[in-house]
Amino acid sequence: MSGFDRKATRPAVLLISVLAVAGCGTVRYPVESWKVPVRKNPESAMIFGRIEMPSNKKENPDGKVLLLNDVNFQFWGKVYIYAGHVPRGEKSYVMTNKYFVIPNIKPGKYYFAGFQTGNVYNSLPYSKEKLIEIKPGQLMFIGSHDYLDGTLNGLRMAFGIPGSYSLRPNKSPSELEMLQWLSRAGDGSGWENAINKRIRELGGKPSPKASPAAAGKNTG
Image 1: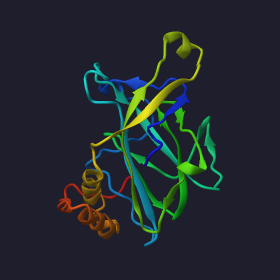
Image 2 (image 1 turned 90 degrees about the vertical axis):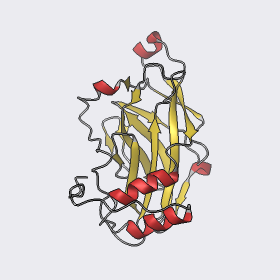
Image 3 (image 1 turned 135 degrees about the horizontal axis):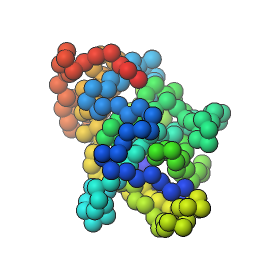
Image 4 (image 1 turned 180 degrees about the horizontal axis):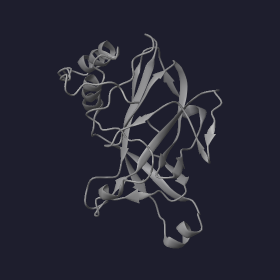
């Protein structure tokens, strides 16, 4: 997906260390115990991807992580409600490692409207050229992206003046890596054939089935 690496504006994003993730009240699911919700019908589609801070010391010397709470994908023409000042999109699941999954969406055109970090909503620029067309039954990998904070100083933040950020494509995790995780998370969900078919198309092998101890009822 091109377009996610362009600059956008938003209020100052909340960046925190790994030890300070408690207290937000938003569910982030453990990446190896979360289970994909049961597939509603053969035409149900899925969007998945990842957003996180850069892992290199030069750009992120303090090892900060992005407190990713939600991603907002909206169906073209559908009216969504707001939760406070934050617009809502299709039901999304965010993992503790910043993978995100939007399962059981219907075919059609969607756009990536933004994402929430802490209690801050980060909007993405909208244009019809950026619409994402989802086909029946499709598994759409949006990509892995590093969040790059723009120029912000204390005074701008204190007065709530929008800063800037950009999303830079990252090769890791790849589509294949995320699909192999989804193969484990989707065991028994009805998504297995679609996930494993795409893995094979990419030249990979489906992950072994989850053990009974690791499997369990979906909590999403």
